[in-house]
Image (tube, rainbow, N blue to C red; front, side):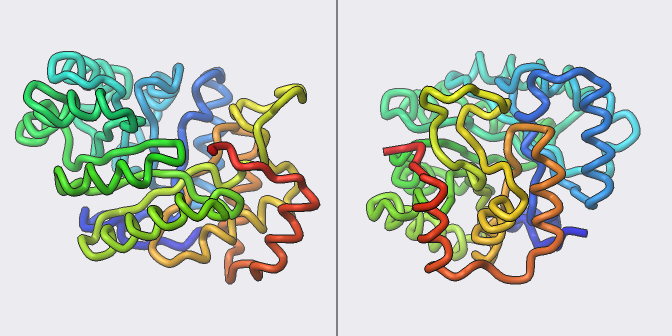
Length: 285
């Protein structure tokens, strides 16, 4: 089984490996149901999805009829205005077949102009605060990609006391001194506030480039169990953070297997050698 830890100040105790439901975006219900069995096998009790993840919310909906109490359920919106975000939240609730979600996150909030809209009058933040008062959501988070996201998360956290953040974290990206410095600032602030920190792209090897895209992920992931072990254990070796699984159901069992066996992270020297041998390239510059 996978170890658990408090999900920030929410009162939830989540498995350190959270199911990234982007993996359900383009699968059948039968494939999704088999994925649920894998999650149950490893005791995963936290699902992270989004309105923009294809059919993911629709695939999760049937699970909730019998397993709502087994999962901390999180979804996201990319809408930036109060009206659009409010309408999307209700669509998400309908697709997920629930009356409420535990965590609603502002998805991919990186750009300056959209940040001003989202966090200003008539923005998604107002919709989230209203939804929390109405019991439609319990907690509010913010997510994003790109090198700029760590710095933007600092700005978001200074504007509002979010319950969680989500951002990339892997060995090759953390060799970027600018990103690494801002990531450390985000982590320090979140630890001080007891804000949950979710990380993504743990299995990112490099962009696909000209190679055939044989996985559902938009980046080329690690494939071999030993490489997945190394990458996952490197992330899990950082106390307090969560690892959100990669966006391909066929790699999910390998990621959960790695997480279930975690004891310690690999030495930095081993990571450096692997980065060279596997020709790792950061997804974000």
